[in-house]
Length: 176
Image: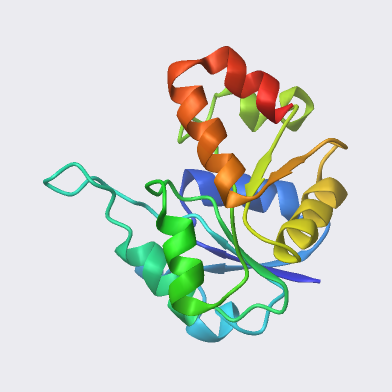
């Protein structure tokens, strides 16, 4: 199995630590001079871990995410760990007809966050459609000590996201 990580910042390093134990991992990060566009094609999974800085209007700049999605043609799925606005995943799936799964990263960019320790992590959330969600779920189960991973359709993920913003307890209950 081969995995490509697009973006090798804090989140990309975390993803590398998790998945390099079970797979051949290639890094694609043009600003750092790492990898090439062909690495986004000759691979089983592409993890998107690129920055989505705020635009002047406060919205996420998803231009790098969108570029990676357009270039990536993995054998199984594209996994987006980058922060994107609600509706972005659905829009990208519709625009590109690719197997895209959103996996929000609750540890953020902090290297000392509790969720950076897999033994402390008790959930991952997968938002997308079958069969990509099941393929990503199997990948995460094989790489972690977690045997419970919640997979959600995008509609259910949106409900959990909205509820989580206003009722954090509901979010935790809903996802575990």
